[in-house]
Amino acid sequence: MKNLLFILLFVAIQPLVAQESNPKKVVDDFFIAFHAKDTTAIQQFCHSDITLQTIANTKEGNKLETQEFGDFLKSLITIPANMKFEERLIAYKVEIDGNLAHVIDRRRKK
Image (cartoon, rainbow, N blue to C red; front, side, top):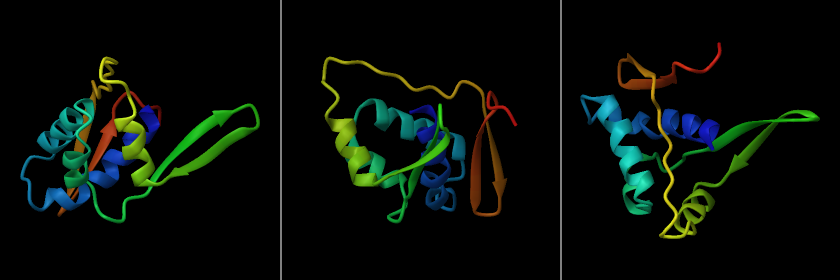
């Protein structure tokens, strides 16, 4: 899930950077909506052509998995209401190049 969110964040904040002068706030607001399982708000943070991909390290090697955004949203709302979860980006850096912001998890190995 952590890798998925890293990729999701990279794609999700792209359309908002031009409108939002503080990309870090966009990331923080995304996670507030994510933890609230607010799929309507999450959609506001994401481009309509978002592609969700993650890399899984398996015994057979690295495996690239693609998930439809709608399936991601459905999986989020199926989490029981009494189940609490929290994904945190404890140490991240925002790099800005014009209208594009890139969020980098500082804990990731290069």
